[in-house]
Length: 116
Image (cartoon, rainbow, N blue to C red; front, side, top):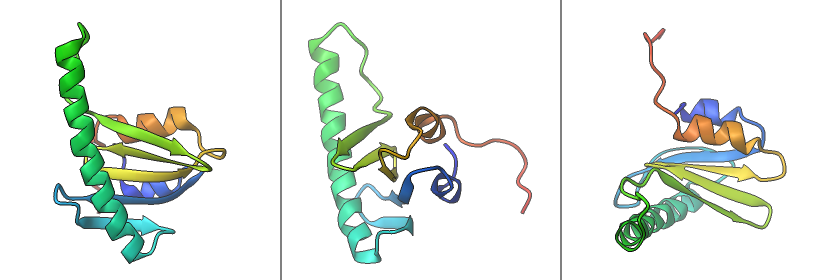
C-alpha cells in the first residue's frame, strides 16, 4: 500500500486516514475535519470487526477460502469508502480510477531505500 499523502494525489480521493483497532485516529489528511474523522474512524473499526466476522462465517459455510480479511469497500451516493487494514480512503466515485486505487490501497507496502 502506498502512503496517505500519495493516496491523496489520486483522482477523486477527498480524504484518507489511519485508525487504531479501538477506533481512534492515527493520522488523517483531506477534507474531513478532526471531529468527522474521529467519528468515521470508530465506524471503520467497528465495520472492520463485522466484516471479519462475516469472512469467518463465509469460510465456514462455503467451500471458498475467506480467511484473512484484506479490506472492504462501501459505495453509496456520490462517494465510496475503501478500507485496507487500518487505512480508509474516501473517494468521489465518478472521478476515481478504482482499478488503480485498489491496487495502490490493497497492494504490497512500498519497498526500497528511504530517501529522507
